[in-house]
Length: 247
Image (cartoon, rainbow, N blue to C red; front, side, top):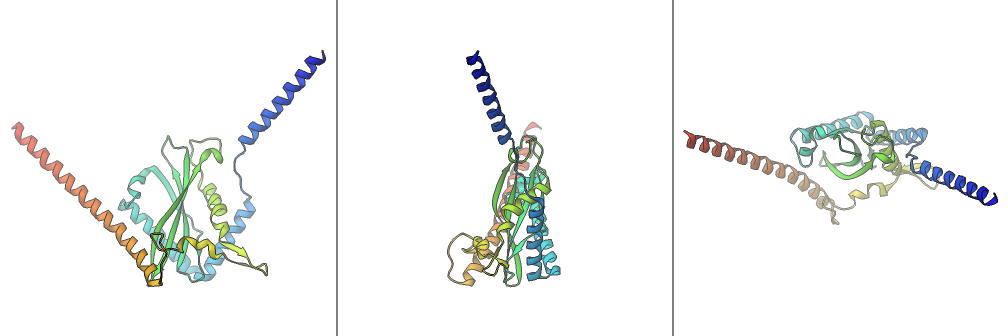
């Protein structure tokens, strides 16, 4: 009887342990709503105080227009996105004190049925000779199983904003020795090298590297477009040739 009692207790203990492990594994990543709201407001206030509200929204519109233009022209990886992704450029972004470098985030929802993850792209803005240029940076992969039970439904934009705020914007500001908030210089370490991740010697060299990257991006697009036209023309010539043989 004692043996059976001990076995029952062992079984109950094992069941409770397994249940706790299962519950822990199924605990999805949640964020403190008040903390997220506070961070977003602090970042927004700091960036707008540097740029001014009107300039802030003007830059946001320029960045958003650039993305729409890239998508329309199927520039770079944007030619693969099409209707496969639903995206937004987050309305909150971070600028440095000189107001010539910006870090945004593009919130991406993958709309393919077989997809089980979404993502966030870093999006950079640099001001060179009074003109803003925009570039895509690293991509953050977000498996849906970390955030919700249904892995076949895209994460909401609200959830993506929370993730971007916690993983990106949270590092923008830091407290100084007087316990006052200030911009964290390390936040803009992405710009510590030139556009090709090489050290630079002068500001002019740094600027030229980003301008070169921008020119190369459009030159690659022009060549790809021209190649597509030539291939289409060859197909039409061959089609007409085979039709002539049948006559």
